[in-house]
Length: 370
Ligand SMILES: [Zn+2]
Ligand SMILES: [Zn+2]
Image 1: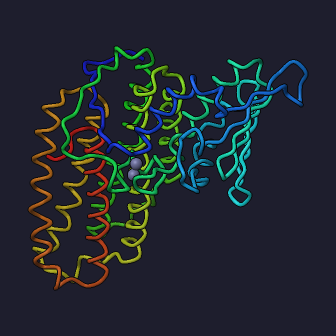
Image 2: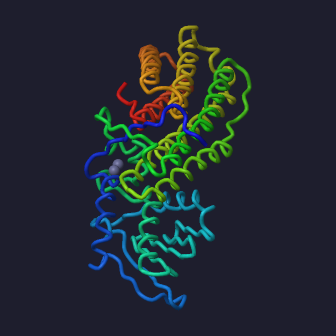
Image 3: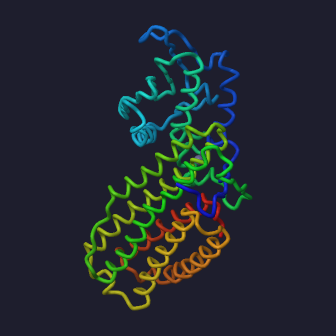
């Protein structure tokens, strides 16, 4: 795939002690302190002539944190990446996972122990340790907020992603693996266009038409494609600070998952109560239709930003107008909310969840604070 007009993105900013920054320190330490007991290398028991490496993530991260891996997220990551492995096992209940990757067997345990078997030599083992840490980075728990890194990246922990911070522009063409990240971002347009289709369905549903349910599976497949590319980028990018840019698409897809779950609930609710809007006066009815219409516009703009075809300033201007509109409708709704029944109120709450996820995504893209 070729680059289009725009190749620059903003680098999200994270607070100082966030795991998304800590790893940078860790990995540069890894090479020099290997001899000091951070990783042990010995002959491999399984295959003569090969070596085995044993280490512990808590030591590598120099943390005293008892829980260092979110196994739920870890299994998610490994499953997303399983087409790159020749074997994948991940057991939440046992807190053990094992994958076979590039001829080596990597086991990881809940308390942070990690073993790499059948490595060719010391360098091969160390390289695999680094690559594997990159891969599972999103599942490592941040000391700042107690959430897995991927939640920090998504802005969902409400602590680690700095809003309104001065941000550095990164030119993807200058990264050796920039094209992979570019592809991850532009692939976001697929789930996003499915989403905008769904928003027009919701409007039809609110007007009383029966609507088809969300294609959740289809949507998740599209998100997984984006995540796979993001993980490829993180593993293959030599410089770790640049590699951390892979958290941009990862954080966005996590937000989009929430959006789709909410939309799915919403459609079921609308289908159950086809006369939802019959009992309210025209003004409230209009506001409800209007807010879903505007939120649809918001996600269309997000899709534009992800497609990287237009210029950032133009996108920001457009988003600002939409947000202004949504703000106004939300205020009107708040004033009338006492007149609403429970079902309609739930509708607004869902709209709000979808709206807030949109704001988080904009913040990840560096278009936050508008
Ligand atoms: Zn964090
Ligand atoms: Zn956090």
